[in-house]
Length: 418
Image (cartoon, rainbow, N blue to C red; front, side):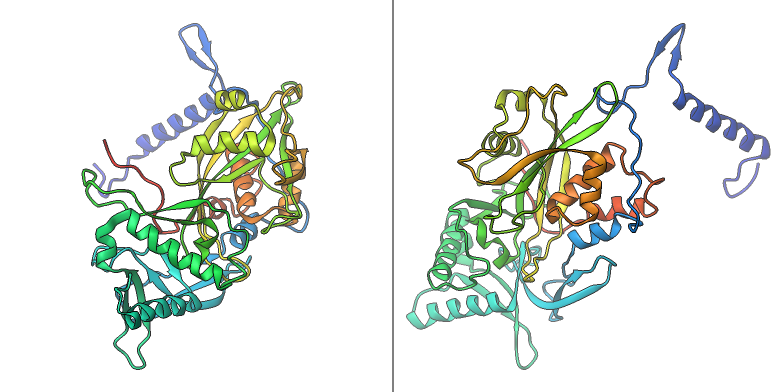
């Protein structure tokens, strides 16, 4: 017997023969008795695809992933007096634009973790609100913690104990009060435009014990105000595609965003996308948005839609606002005969038009930076899952896969165990 777990020469040869046999089996149909059972593809309507080569001048999709997933959040313990720093990532992976932030928590209990981060100008506005309550003799809804050094600086922000005792309703009431007040005073105008009147859920971190009884939603907040507190935006993306049954050619339905959109005007997008409001599920959201944005038949979508995972989005805006996202991803195969196609909804006004693009053209437009960032990542995910980008065509394939879905370390949607 050989030590250190090393096999004998004959064992190694036997193992090598087994591996080679397995590789051969993977190339062939599986034989069981006298019958042949073909290997089942991931998608039942799929045929083998030819991986795409990147266009000249582009060595990998990794710079695009870096550019889109550009947010770097603090890794320091919120209880520490050390500075909590956020930064942005360049396409080359370098860090720039570092800025101190204050962790935003539900409470200052030792087991708590941040649900967001506030920039210095927002922290100052919260301190002003805190001080106004003391001057007026009313109880402040905030629990502010400061460093021990001199001059002291704000270390973290949380709700006051009496607010947390009121739960979801009381926290939501005070968030609505302060955000509405800022809007009336025209503060943070680069963020607070395009008021949606859509309450967006902000979640607690799940409790350590699955049986613990706790409302997953900490509070709701007007959607446009999410970046002020660095809170996670939750939404859905759907990619509709057509696959020619004869040639195997794959084409994607790609819209161009309206030039009137507040963010990313004129950029290319996923077929359908939308934010999840308070009380919405991912499936109900994407079916509703498919009907509103693309006039797709709801019955067809419900029958053929395929949930294919999620996409964390580590996002810092050009104005340095923190807006991480978590998006549910869906695929929707459409008939190759063109009987069902996305169409412009003139009343919705979200898109300029839809175009059916060959997957090679889609990849080219990705590399040219024509897609909005979150949608670019969703399309990259589609190309990876369907085999259009592989380790043979992208030398940084594993890094692309690894960094495409980097953990944002902030709470996302969850449900209480039954």
